[in-house]
Image 1 (cartoon, rainbow, N blue to C red):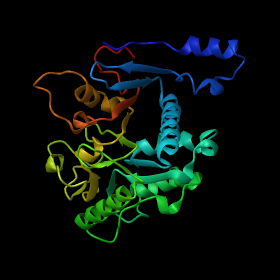
Image 2 (cartoon, helix red, strand yellow; image 1 turned 180 degrees about the horizontal axis):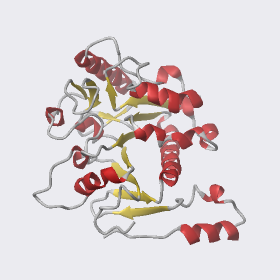
Image 3 (tube, helix red, strand yellow; image 1 turned 90 degrees about the vertical axis):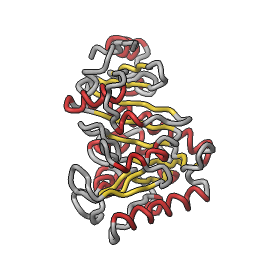
Image 4 (cartoon, rainbow, N blue to C red; image 1 turned 135 degrees about the vertical axis):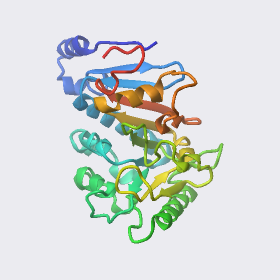
Length: 295
């Protein structure tokens, strides 16, 4: 059972009582959000709209960045493309654009389309245009794929880059399986339940040895992609899946709720961190079919 808390009046009265603006309270109270905990440890954060979700997501990422920098001196983050990147836009605004230690960020792509970096389908281009051009990250800390080779070679090259950063402990290592242990892996989810470029019923889901694999038959264009494998995703310290829109509500239900043995095994349902923590961020439409939740 989920615990539902209406924060609207509470947020208003707290701001009035403390003579603070609602924005200054945002770090201690989730704006227009519901924070829920399921019995298996998955945390759900359900927001009234995408703007509230974006604010909470920025606070979540900034908090993890601060903790990782204080503990390890670096913040190793990997992320997918698509609408997820646009939902990170609040990081470009105050206070995050000034308070986050951007020079300590090491940014990787959890999946990428094998196209030129300047191509409209490139996740790197979307990330650069939406975020990197607006905050003071270190260019050498942003790791894109080699876009001049085949998908197979691009995957091999990208895994090599990650291994070099594990050796220097810019990326931590998971003691259970020696996989890279990213401080945070950020994922979106498609209406079919895919995450990164791991699609339902695809053989890439069965990859256990490689950290980065490739596909040439993506169900959605472009067909050639590289992607983190499930062992790498599930070795992260924190994994966040960000989902908006009613078109993804059924997939969210199948990925999270206890459906029984007849439930199709969606890639999103296979995201289960070995030792880390899993958080789902939703707007109300995306969460509308979750059991025991009234949005």
